[in-house]
Amino acid sequence: MPHPTRAPAVPIERIVKRAVRRDPYLEPYADRIRHRLSLVDTTQKRLTGGRLALADFAAGHEYFGLHLRGNQWVFREWAPNATRIFLVGDATGWKEAEPFALTRKNEDGVWELRLPKKSLRHGDLFRLRVHWRGGQGDRPRDRADTHLDHLAWARPCARPDSTT
Image (cartoon, rainbow, N blue to C red):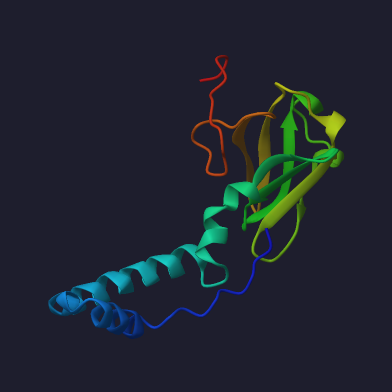
């Protein structure tokens, strides 16, 4: 998902004036409408950092996580404080292996791994081993074909019966 420049926002006052002009019965509520639009704008800026459109932020599951694209798997993760990240699991004998090391894509902390389709099979279990200054730890991940129900970048969510 490219990070397009956020389209300039329509000024709140212009939106309120247009709404009141179209429906004069809104005039007594103009201050309340301004306040609510201000809250929406503040929330959007908090979520997107002002760097991308809200629709692109909401479609993050299309970019992050594990996806089969053509004849390869593409895995992306956001980990701004990581120094190294490995996908470990059934395919690696649960050990760190260089072919399964993610590479940092940008200064925002986006990491990516591309693997041939044959590298992962339906039902393979995996997690991320994240290294940071002064330590490391695993981030639970699940099967290559589905996502656990608590993951942020997931579409269909299912918990394999054999996990807790």
